[in-house]
Length: 251
Image 1: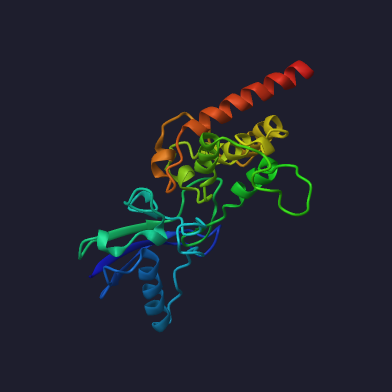
Image 2: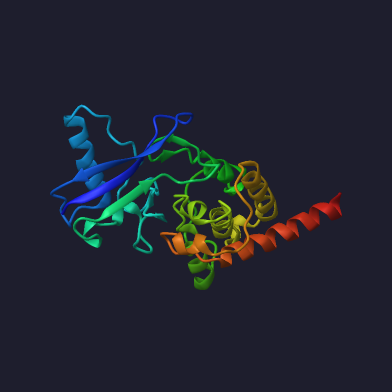
């Protein structure tokens, strides 16, 4: 396959960026999208050019590091797929592909396709934890939990923190991410002691990180590679409302 790639190049956070076109040949349909970029970078290095910077780690759809916009869609055209799981057989020979980083104030560009997603880490630090005694892992059946509750918690826990929801949202909101992290803990008995504080602290941290407000467009769920649904947002809204009412009553 021959492809024309228009890739965003930016030397640093404060440098001006631009799209640069590259022609690639002999791209195998069996290559993953990241393998195709690897081959392009090898070619650039052999020519003495600076390779394209992009994040990657597990390449198994688990870590979320490979996040980028492909033809204006987070992670590319295949639904429920991360970039590392996207294969070149989904493109026709001679296609033009536009590749760029996440576009959000809370995700400043570090270089090329790499953005700083530390804001998501800080949201988790604000409340995405439970208070338990350290030591050996407890017996798995020590706290009976219904299967339906476990399934709902695990569905929310699938969030890999890639930021696709932010990139897809017209408001650049991180509500789906925040709600998923709060929900998977709030559904389980172990997460109940901090449930109210978690909702308030995580939402307030999200606002501090300059993410936009959620207006329920729904693009976040559509772009999510793990198919996390909007019901987690409804649950976080309910927890946040109850927690803020309790704060006012206690004031």
